[in-house]
Image (cartoon, rainbow, N blue to C red):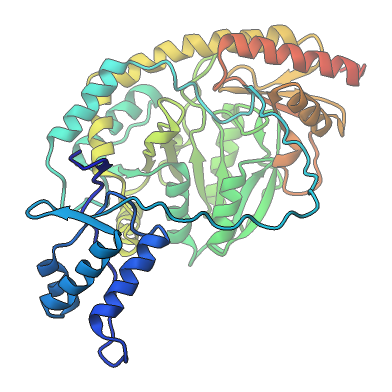
Length: 471
């Protein structure tokens, strides 16, 4: 950055000055006053370079003499500095400090609580252990490509092909690139589906307890949101209303109870959808991570005509990437692509290019294999420490477990743990109405192995102190 005198030159500023030819005050005096107040008030900071007199005159539509007179007056007052050929700059002035405010009675404010240092809230992955060389290579490749001028609403064709292969390999879903639309994440995909189907589906079912964002998306698009009870295996099919147009579900690892929807119930759910004409929106949440159990087939693979599959890299890599996918019938994807163009909704081209490189070089697969082992170690620590003091659910997959507790204990433990530096979440918070399930949702994705152990030790101590209930 060039230096002028003792000041750093920030940039050549663009001055939003408005002068009035109808005012009694001459134009040069108006400009002088505006610039003086801008410098006095901090809108023009020391070291900033002003436009040339010729350039500012052209911008304001006045003669160059007007600007020259204003600059000369401010030079004389010491507001401006400069040399011929090098520009005009705001100088540093020793202005009198404003008078201190009159003393008033001291206001006693509560001391802020210290931020918890161990985060056991679900929903976040471990982002500090990644292949830096692979990450840099992916972004260098994206930077080498020219910026696009006409983004494809479906997503980059090459990335769609890679995602189709990834899904065929990891989720046993027979899908081609024509069935894949690249989104900005699960919520973006869910919002597009809701927007596309809201004319023929006014009621949307969401698991209860369940993902609050899904409820908010449907409500924001004008749906009547219907809570659909879940148990330890997932959504309860018997009793689902026949007039639902949409049903959002997380069969791979139900959030927040942690169930994995068994095959017989998956088949009954699809039979219900075929009978009622409902569309099932399958959030493949936590499908990448499972322990000691075989993978279950995606609902989409069992009936592509009735299911829309949503996925994301927020858990596999990082929420900061902001990339996901939507898998569905070609006619639905054509509608969604049209909506994206109407809304100006798009997924970043450089992000798509970088992710394509990561998938193509096998970096995503390698990262997933490494993190499965790492998360399995953390999950084992959670089971080891909390298993003796409470009943755990959902520990066979994903990055969180449910610690079942008597009613009312969970929210109390959240506050007590925060006072001891551990951040927790209660399952009560995820219900639509009165809670039916009680306890803590323990996430072990974003904390280190040592922090998981220390945090769970605090939780176990608090549980033992609060309850002696027998499960």
